[in-house]
Image (cartoon, rainbow, N blue to C red; front, top):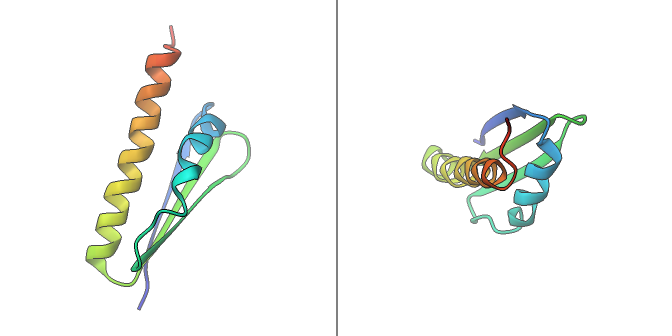
Length: 81
């Protein structure tokens, strides 16, 4: 049985976020797979699939953290306001 989770992040920085994290797609464990893609100009889509719940949780922790760090670095580099 495969377990999946899909997250959509809508932001005007979607392309910058994609370019920040897409390099990590090949670096996934044996029990999970990850796909990051753009949907239109303003939506980053994260799709995670895993063979079991612990593997899904671990992959989600990693990838949500990567995206969060990319967002934080983008805000530091180009603060809005």
